[in-house]
Length: 94
Image (tube, rainbow, N blue to C red; front, side):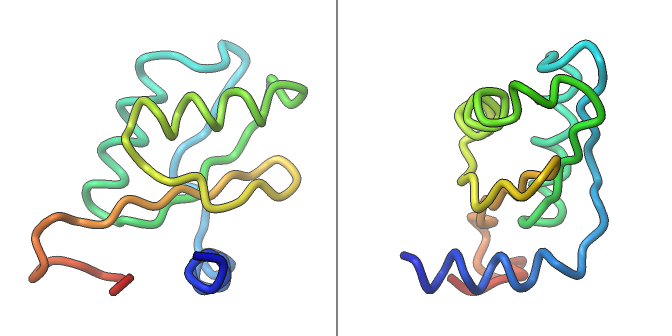
C-alpha cells in the first residue's frame, strides 16, 4: 500500500486545491464538495484556511464521511483518493 500512496502523492503535487475548509471547519457543505470532487476527479487536494490545529481530525472525518482514503497531510493541505467504481472512467489505475 505504501507504493500506492507514494504514487498518489506524486500525482497530487501537480494538483491545485479544489475544496477549502474555512473558519466554520467541517460542515456538510465541505463534505458534499469533497464528495462531488472525488466523483469527478478521484484524487483531490483540500486546503485548510482555518481550523489549522484540527487538520488531522477533520481530515480523518472527511475521509470517513466520503468513503475515501486519506493519502497524505502536508502542511495545511490534505490529499484524498476514491477510485471510480466504473472501470472505464478511472483516471488512476490502483
